[in-house]
Picture (tube, rainbow, N blue to C red):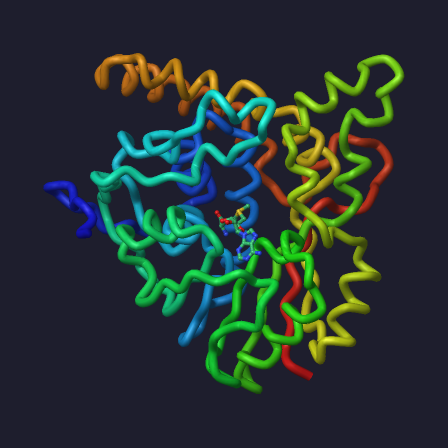
Length: 323
Ligand SMILES: C[S@@+](CC[C@H](N)C(=O)[O-])C[C@H]1O[C@@H](n2cnc3c(N)ncnc32)[C@H](O)[C@@H]1O
C-alpha cells in the first residue's frame, strides 16, 4: 500500500533538538511523556550511524524509526489516528495500537533520509503499519523468544529498543551476536530495574493497590527481563558480546514524569478526539503540541535531573560488538 505524499514535499534540513521534539510530540501528542522519552532515545541513537545492512528488531509500527531517520509526517498524522479496543484498554490492558485500518496511510511530508533493511515484530498489525512508511526494505513477523531467521554475520547494525520485553533473553542476545557481522555493532537501548523504584509504589500504604494499578496499566508485566547494569553486562559477556560504549540518557526525573504521564486517560482522550471534526481536532492539536513542546523543552536533555542526589539512570544505550 503506497504512503500518501503531501503535494509539496519539504526536504528536512539539519534538524535541531527542538524540531525533533516537535516531530515526536506531534506523532505521540496524547502521550507527551512518551514523546519526550522517544526524543531522548533518538538523540542518543544519533551518535551511532545505522550502517547497512541494518535491522530494527521489534520495530513496532515503525513510527519511532521513521522520525529518527529524518522522516516528516503531516501534522494531521499521529499514532492515535488508528487505534482500537478503547473499551478494554483500561482494566484488561489491551494494546490499543494493535490494529490497522485498511485505509491506514499516514500523510508523509518528506520520506526518511536513511532507510533500514529489515524490521521485525511479533505483531502483524504493527508490521502492516510499518509497511506503509517505506522505511524498511523487508518486514518479518518474528517472536524474539525464537532463534532469529537470518544467516550468520548478515548485519552491520542490529538495533533493538525492546530487548527487556523478551523472556528468553540469553538466547536473544546470543542470536543477535550470531547475525552481526564481525565488524558490525549491536545497539541496545534497555530499561534498567531502577524503573521499578521510580514509581509511586513506595506510597502504596497511602495510595492503595487500585491507584497504583490504574497508573501502571499492566506495563510492568511487559518487561520480564528488565535488570540492573551488572546483570545486563553479565548477560552480554555470556552471550559473546563486548561492550564498546554505555550512554545513560533517561534520568530518575524523566522516569518519574513518565510514571504518571497521561497513560491512564490516553484511551479517553483518544475517544474524545475521535468525536471532533477534523478542523477542530487540528486546531486543538496545534495548541496542545505548542504547549507540550514548551513544557518539555527544558526536560529534553539526557542529563536533566531535579533530584539533589544522583541515582541510577532508568534507560541506557549499549553499543556492543560480537566478541
Ligand atoms: C515499546 S514497543 C517498541 C516498538 C518500536 N521499537 C518503537 O520504538 O516504537 C515494543 C515492541 O516489542 C514488540 N514485542 C513484544 N514482545 C515481542 C517478542 N517476543 N518478539 C518480538 N517483538 C516483540 C511489541 O509488539 C512492540 O511493537
